[in-house]
Amino acid sequence: MKKLLFLTPVILASCSTRQVDVPIVTVKPIVETATKHSTSTINLTFANLPAKVRANNPHLAAARHLIGEAQGKLRQSGLRSNPELEVEFETGNRFHDLMLTVGVSQRFPRTNRLAIEKRASQILVQAAAAEIRNVERQLIGEARTAFTKVLALRQEQALIKKQEANARQLADFIIKSAEQGEASLLEAGTALLEATRLSNRAEQVSIRSQLALASLKPILGLSPDSTLVTTQTLPEPSLPPMLVASVRRPDLQAAQLRAKSASASKDLERARVRDDFEAGIFAGLGRSEDAPDGIEAEQIIGVRFKIPFTYYNDNSGNILAADARHQRLTAEVNALHRSISAEAHAYYQEMAQWSALSDQIEANLIPLADAQITKTKDAYSRGEIPLQDVLRAQEQRLSLLTSQLEAIRDFHLAHANYLTATAQ
Image 1 (cartoon, rainbow, N blue to C red):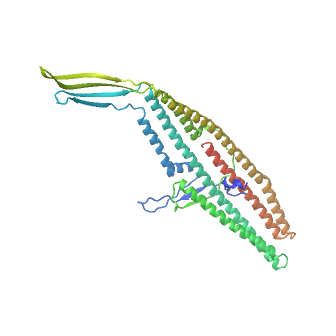
Image 2 (cartoon, helix red, strand yellow):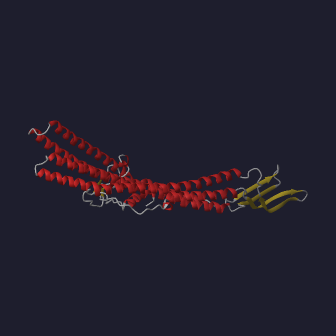
């Protein structure tokens, strides 16, 4: 349980009444340099938390440029090479014979290479969009975890303060009893030490709460000096419907698209076995000396073809590499699919266990503690037991509430991880 305390944030409105309030965060937003300092209030809940992350997270804003990069590569792919202008000038040593030839040539693919290039680039644009959605998923999961931890730590601090107040009340009672000779001052010192320990623990929890707030600010795009105040509590555990729709995961979608693009790249390397052929036209104008007729003008026009042979370079190495890359990415898709399913099931089972533990404490142990407190109070009113027994019975109830808080907190951290694992 102690290990999972740092994995699952939870806060209860009141562990005895199970009252649920909507968590709210008041935020002072980032102030632009060119504007005056101003404050505004942002109500942050688990419902609108994803929208806040999408709108303000700077890392997500930077990741969105991946689509622009992929679209630029798409625009550049599948284009023919530019035509080439050729100019040739010939003359003799006495400059009597001259010839100026001008031609234009163009390369043409012998296969459907350009169409395959375009198709592969279109797939990569879709993959870039899926990768951005995956960044959103991860950042939203981090925000949920940090926000839940903040609320859980605040509730833990409130319970510790109740325990501290009860310990100090017990210490005061023992001191008064010791003054009357009915108790030992050593026992009073032990009670004061316990109260001091609880006070120190409350300060430690407060520090962890501030650290959780600090980790939440950059995810929401807030500056370090901005104020963020959380209030109220987390709801009680409630198991959601089991959902293992791995197809919803954008990282799986991106992996599938990458594998599909690799398949197209494999076809592209096969299409590159045959190099492009080249065709062109040319025309020339010149003069030549033809004795004894003198200098005569000449004109020429013609066409030119170049067809490369596949002899030394058959592109077999690139084909082999592309085929291996396609097999690797396909295997990674299958492995990721299994990992997602196992991850979602694990977090769901964790939620079920913490929910059952919380319900057990609520249904069985806390009623027993309440009954014990009632009995000790009745016995104290009849003068049968000292107040010390009543206060210790209350301390036992507070300890049970702390255990229940730990279970609920761990449930909500597992729930945050479950939502992230199932891309909700």
